[in-house]
Structures are given as C-alpha cells and as structure tokens.
Length: 143
Image (cartoon, rainbow, N blue to C red; front, side, top):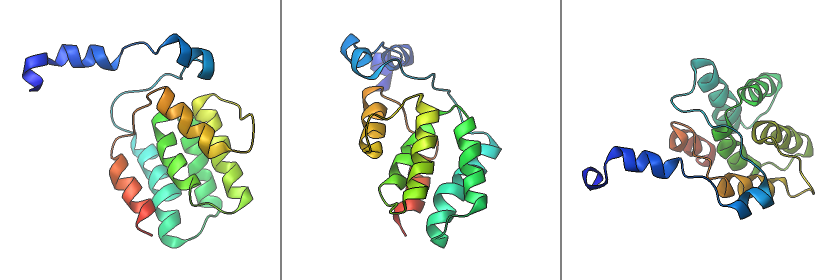
C-alpha cells in the first residue's frame, strides 16, 4: 500500500502546516528533530522515566536526568513526561515535570491543569512520539 502513495507523498503529508486555528489557540510548535535520541538522552530517559518507576523513587540522579532532557530541545520526549505526570502525586515532582514540559514545548501554563495543557499541545501540534516510545511507556506503566 505504501508503494501506491510513494514515500515522498507520505513525507509531504507529515510536513503539512498546521491549520490557522491551531496556531491561533496554541501558538507555533517548537521544532521537532528527526532520528534517534543521542546515547546521553536515551540514558536520561531510562533513568528519569523507567528506572524511577521501577524503583518507586525520585532523587538527585532523576532530577539531573530530567534537566538533561529539558535541555535537549526535543519536544518528542514530552509524551513520556505526560505519561509520568498521570501517576505523580507529589507536588514537587509534578512541578519538576511541568517545568520540563514547559521548557521543551516553549509554553507557559495558564492554570494548574498542567497535564491537560501538555497533552492538548502535543495533540494539537501533532508532535510525534520519541523513538522507542512504546518500550519506555511500557516501563512506566508496568509498575
């Protein structure tokens, strides 16, 4: 089926501009890189999202990993931030995750519904999931 449309047509579809009403409501999306995550970023994702859930703990190492993620300028990782936000009950960690999402997406929150705002932006902007997303998400949700 892919051969009927051609790879160029699929790439063009992926790069289609967002509708004006999306830009009006949510602003312009951040640039989204292509390709795999760097080894440093993969390690930070593992430590911050998967290991923290397996170990049921969040400490200095996870905060440092989340800082690495925040500085990456890769909004694809916000899908994992959003997933983890669904489970967090501690205000401090929730704030750390919200700040990371804010930094990666380039948004400011208008209220305390951070998870809702984050997921609304991800969907409206059609931000793709990061490479190996399902493996990392499985690591979060299996605990």
